[in-house]
Length: 120
Image (tube, rainbow, N blue to C red; front, side):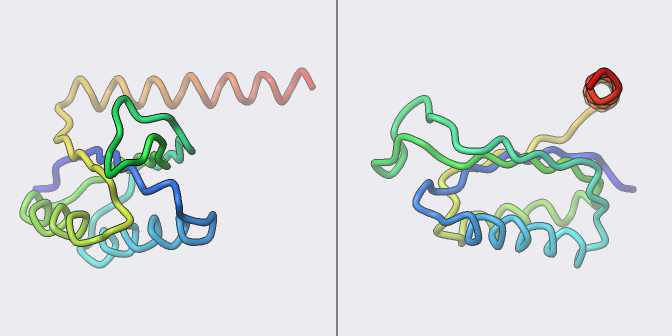
């Protein structure tokens, strides 16, 4: 039985654009190798941290929403812990209300983008 999860991770700000993309691809490949389905992804970009982590005040944020077997989550999180480019990460199991909220939020964003495209 697949459950839906959401992971937000923060990468160190000293990475180049290419290194950041390689890091994200590494985690995408991990999920695909475990037969997980990536539902949604969002790159939040460089943001200020609430408090310094490893003497860094900013970090690259990235969100991945996916469906996976619950047994791979421990291995997923170990992969984050072993990567020195990751400052922090958080994986949350989504319940049905959170899934519905995320779907509505994406639908609104898509409709707004289409509306802006039509007016320009």
